[in-house]
Image (tube, rainbow, N blue to C red):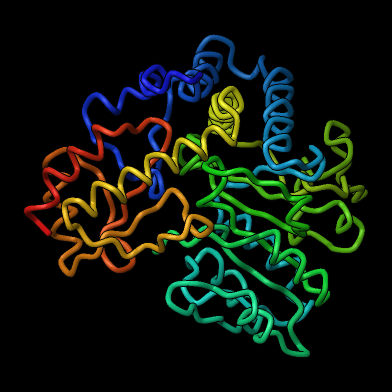
Length: 370
């Protein structure tokens, strides 16, 4: 039995904030912060003498990340953020064909393709739902790639990635997933989803802070595509420093061009350790438990919810209908309640550091404003 109060104690931010915004940026737990600080302490006392140890620690984090999504470590690489990772994917696939994607994707899902001159076709939701049939009808003879978020950032709608993976295989499409709003909050299995590429940022549900993200490249692509850039650590044996022979790794980590953002990679490792200790199913069940409480209490207090109620579409995000959302968000922040203005109103997101009292406090302050 998980003691959620103990888990909450790992997040000191909960002592000062009712923090309901991991969909924007999650606070970091002690485990993640300690791993990041450890790097700076080592730099303080030993400088670059820890280089080999840092490389080994980075590989251990790679293994943890691969384990989280059911990939092989060679299929996983670290990036700066979602936009960086998606830009790499778009650069590699820009000559493959046209893209279909969802109408309300975050720009990180679409700008890299537009910048590379790829034609995009947008699927419109029906009553907030992206139906598989509508997505299939949007496929034309020139369509080669499907790009979608696991969870839409301004509605909380959760895609059925397994069904989309089956569709992509049936239609011979390349399947690209923006997992930013799902990574760390719900189970992800790239094999079950039949994903070709997956990208995410560590800023949100995996507790790693700014400056680190990830990319998954299905190993079937290793010998089919050229990466858009190369650096000294793209080589099979970087320590040879052979500046005249381009002998590249031909795996996902080829995109790690040079010296990496060690502190945030290590912080990501600390966050992944916490998530693994709980289990992804337990994390998702806790988030859904909190969401069920949000729905129940909001209904009781007649606070309007814009998010879909069907559990198969639910995520860690709930949208409250409000016309003056930005003003309300500002007033709530003054009361030390942290939410965002998104979609049809106010985005409330919950994670393992939240509890029922957080939601009750939100309702107390939100109801008069609504």
